[in-house]
Image 1 (cartoon, rainbow, N blue to C red):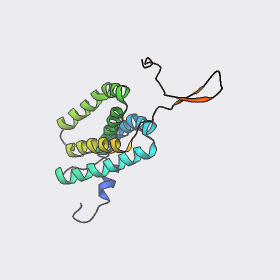
Image 2 (image 1 turned 180 degrees about the horizontal axis):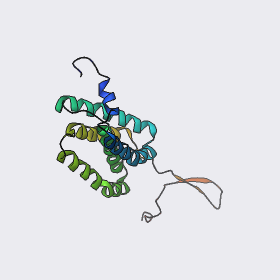
Image 3 (image 1 turned 90 degrees about the vertical axis):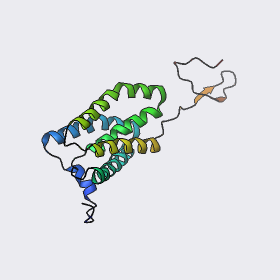
Image 4 (image 1 turned 45 degrees about the vertical axis):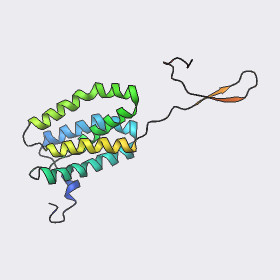
Length: 170
């Protein structure tokens, strides 16, 4: 593949699938997790993570399992990695999001390693690359300072934003 300078195959392999079930599972996964990532991180960041994960998972496949290399699963795993990176960056609410979804990732990894004919290299490389890339390019929104108006003078004061579920500092 790469020996003949056919570098486009690193990307086009992500658009060729081994049958209707293969493409259906990938598209369902992309629809389920991808729309969440797109809402949180934006379309551009999601596209970057998807395509970089696709290329890196294809490269991993070429170098570690050259007999395999078909489908968008590496890129889908990249989106999973991005999901967990976003969760880590959001503190406690993000950790709750991770805990609620870690089972899905574990099942996918079990399936990856238990079923023959699935590229372990592509899935693991996609997961790792998606996590690292999203962790590097995603910054959660900062709390916006509240504007407070002094009741006596009418002056606008800046106040620190405090979430409603936490008591004010002592």
